[in-house]
Image (cartoon, rainbow over all chains, first blue to last red; front, side, top):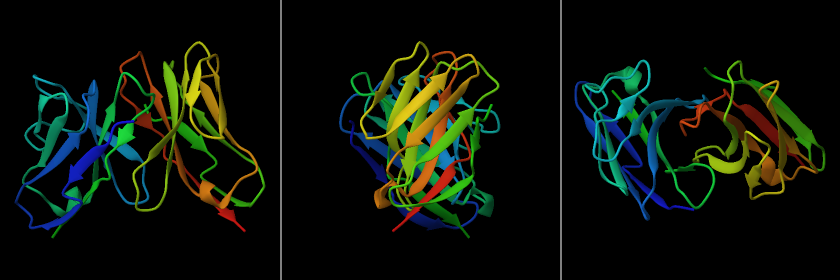
Length: 114
Length: 110
C-alpha cells in the first residue's frame, strides 16, 4: 500500500491565523481526500482533492475556509484559514490507488487553536 | 448519509466472538471496514463490493447484504490486538468517497 507522510503531526495555533497541512505520497494515486476527526468521534469528509482542478467540497465546508491544492498525483495541501477554537481537531489525508484496495490514511495532524 | 453502526461498544474476553453491523438507507456501491487504535490512523481491513466480491488482508470476515444495504463484520476468536474502534465506510454510486459510521469501540480483555 502507499506510504503517506503528513506534516505537521501537531500544532498549537493562535486564533485568526492559518495553518497549511501537507500530504506527500510515495507513489502516484488516483484519489486524495481530506478528513476531519474530533477525538473519539467519526471521520468527516472535508473535500476531494482533484489533481489540476479545484477541490470538491462536502456540505458544510467551503473553499475560503479550507483551501486545498493538489499540484500533482503525489502531493496535496489543506489550509485551515482564519482559525477559531472550533477548528481544533485531527485532520487526516487519505488516498486510494489502482493496485491495492481500500484507503490508506496519513498519520494525522492534531490541531489545537487557542 | 451517515451509515448506522451497532453496537456502539463491545467488551470481550480473549477468544470470544463479536459481530459489528453497519446499515444504510441509501443504495451502496461498496462497504469498507477500518480499525483505529487510540492515537493512530485508521487501518483498512476489508472491502465488500456490490456483486459479492470481497477484498481484505486479515483474519476477519464480513458480509454484505445488498438487498438490505447492510454489512456485518465478524471477529472470531478475538485477540488482544483486535481492540480498537471499528468504522464502516460506505460508498455510493462508485464515487470512491466514503461516509463513515460513528464507530464501534471493541475492547478485548485477557
